[in-house]
Image 1 (spheres, rainbow, N blue to C red):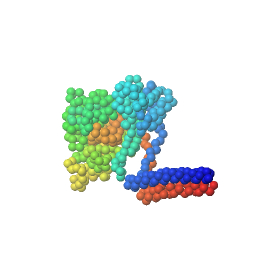
Image 2: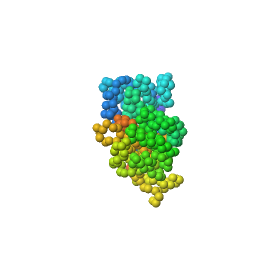
Image 3: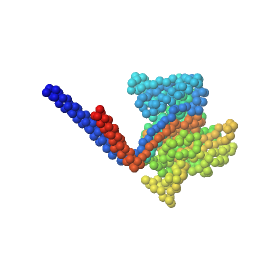
Image 4: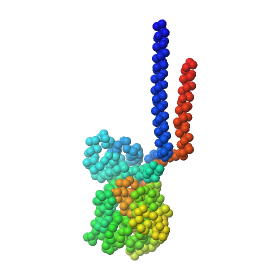
Length: 505
């Protein structure tokens, strides 16, 4: 009798355990089914595409290796970075490559120090006080008393795309090598090209921190690329300073005096100077005669045809030139840019007198609106609508590079260089804060070309290879059936077979 009770109790214990196990499994399957249902419902409405970035190993270009071979000294690089930052792995791999190459060359010594701002708080504070760091994720390059600070956020180049879910930002370039090579060259050599910003005619000011008119963010970007940035007030009768490597005239809103225009012309033609002019639509600057001598005509109206809200023109294809070579797969955006018409075919030749000699001026269209864009003649019309009788359909140039001087590589005389861009807003504080990184890259590329820093221009950004998978609605339905029914069915079938065989044994 006692034995029967024990067998009965053991039998009910087995039933209870099976019930509990079955109920747990059933509840888990129910919750998994609910989760799959909601995921399937959401994915049915959202775009069905995935992107996977595949980044190649960072290898230094030949330009960087040649530069490192010509340097002697010691460079200390302090990386104040969060290890969880998106670009941490790229930055670390590239800096280690610099250290390895410097050791193999022997002339330059590179020391690396890694500081975690969340853990090394005292060290981070000392560095912030010494180098005016405003946040973490920054790099400090120093050699002796020379130093440069680079923000990690400035090393990423993004492209904006319109998708079904809205405006998306995608990484299209890593600018680490160009920035690091520039920093190493700057702190070791110690020489910084001098860039003057003309003031006194309503130009944008590098000391202005306002969103719409200010250029303070651009000034920081220029300084980070090892330029000596200065203001050049009008008056005094001294003309363009002798130490001026590049003169920037950013969005003047008033006419320049005839004497000032003569100074600029002499600086270009006689001193073989370098000028970057940002010319807004509708502005009367008095520079039309100077531009005409360089075979450029700034037309009326403004160019439109953009795809990004808030911008009148978006460009991602450029002319062939050293300035635009680093801009492949990069988007730049502009606000009401002024059309710039070459007075002859770009990349052709035209004789322009300079100091009694006949030199050759060469024009290259850097950027232009394609056939989808046009010159809008009615500035008060918002949004702009193309009118066949009044407006002019594209392509329309908005940025031109001009070079004047002998073309022979054996010539001893330097060339004069002139870059004209039909918009000054595209690198304002507001434009930079909106995150179109290609705008600053375009400006800095033009500045490097004007300053003869061709080595830095030849260093192309590291472009991640993007692997994208997209499914049609029919393919997605078939995949859903496989995930929801076929796979769980196979698991249940094999589980049943295993359970049946165990029961028989």
